[in-house]
Length: 300
Image (tube, rainbow, N blue to C red; front, top):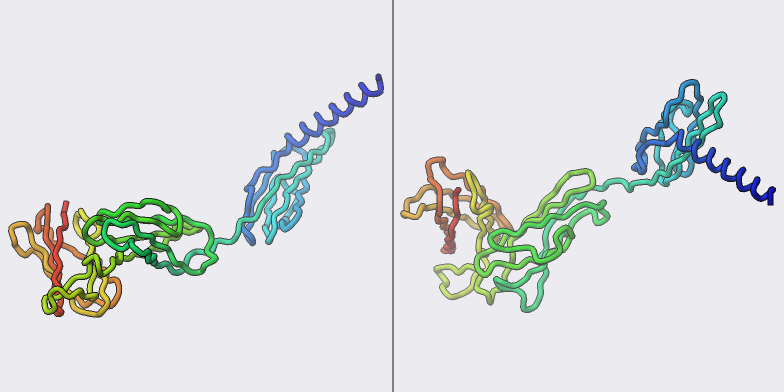
């Protein structure tokens, strides 16, 4: 019984010394490193002490291993960083910390938006699904931020590469997605919601009244309301010339411009004169094909 008591006392004393010893030489430094990068690890400086640093796994000590701090370089796998502290009259102190490897950051290079075709879900007021298409496909983790303009709102999927959006009951809808990469860089893409012909959302030409034309979809102004400037988003299936006129509510023409537009989505900047006033304004778009569309924009 005495031998058992002595053994337990000795074990407790040894555990205490070990715990106290490791607590006196903590290893401070990052818990993870990117492959190929380095980090600095340190321990408590003790007067008259000697130090020895070591590393296991895919980690290696760069430079001197005999100071109160050391530089560790990461390879392809993680491991442990350890320090041993010696001083006359003191029990050696040894402690380690684990270090994991962060996958290398691969920023996104290209980004676009594709609208899913869902039978029976193609008219204003329906819920549309949009997917972010990007390269490289092995892009590092990041954050997708979706925006819907002109009355649309996010139903689900915010933060992911696929989102569902409730479209407005009337008018076009602009969709934008921004991806923030692991290195902090951002890339964005925009598109206009595509509606089925049966919804009457493709504009008609004056030359062929009553016959749907796939030349132009309903345009979108964003931001709207705006202060000094905004943008007009037009999506067309053929190249043409757009004549844009902006009037106040009294019918006075306050701004006009012409611009060639290409097949696909076009972004036309609108910078109004400083003396054009604030409030509700009316825009009108005409093309040589006879297409005419008008809508409201609000300047604050």
